[in-house]
Length: 342
Image 1 (spheres, rainbow, N blue to C red):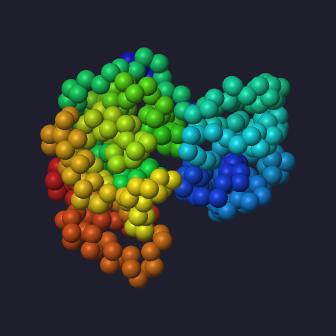
Image 2: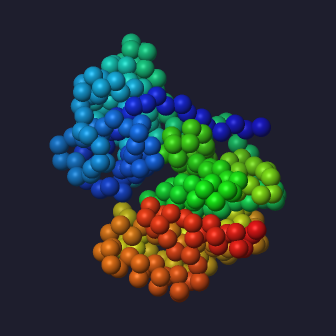
């Protein structure tokens, strides 16, 4: 049986976000602070950084004095590369004995200076985006248990947050559920998962089957989504994950103020209804009963007085529960799921 990718990170953490200027690409750092703030000591930023994680600024030297155990590279830029100017700080942290945790497509072992620093101090170099060997090709055979997949109108739009919030609401409602991580940040938070966008294309659907195996009839796998079916760069991983997950339901994730694809501004976002319809059509290939069970919306950039009206209007238009998971929780979606499936 293929095993999942597992990680055991030592806290407290220092989150490296360097000199990035767009919070969209700090989703790893932001996600860790949001869901495990008690494990974060500070952020490492350089001149020109315009992103704030809401934790203290720290240099590597200050982090050492504070007892920090791990430096986490907290960014996910297009292409997954670390700027050359950041490596001196990463090497300094490794030399000081901090584990270096990387969730990007690069491999820490390919940087000799960091390897030498870690070997001298005993620090670990942890590459989270390392899928297991011998992944199968997807079979499409129906599995027992139930599954709900997060999908999106765009990338970096709240799929991980929505999955974690939905899992939390399910547990609070007494449901039997498991969060299934498919990306680097989710794996860091959960301790295990499978980095689906690092899987060779032929095996993406099979990897999704491995992530959510047969289970009890009343058990729900809450599966973190990746990419977007409507994204010209990342649609492939989304379709493979959709087919392999065989979701009974999906939650559509959206940003209330985003009009174009982030980083691909020459493409407009799809409409909510088109997004729902296309996921149903594509998902029916491996689960004919697939349906949308709710809409999760990031409303953080809406004026407070407009938020409730926006969600109410969207709910009326779609006939589905619409929530901001970080403000409302996902209780309304859980109640809808109970009505439909229980």
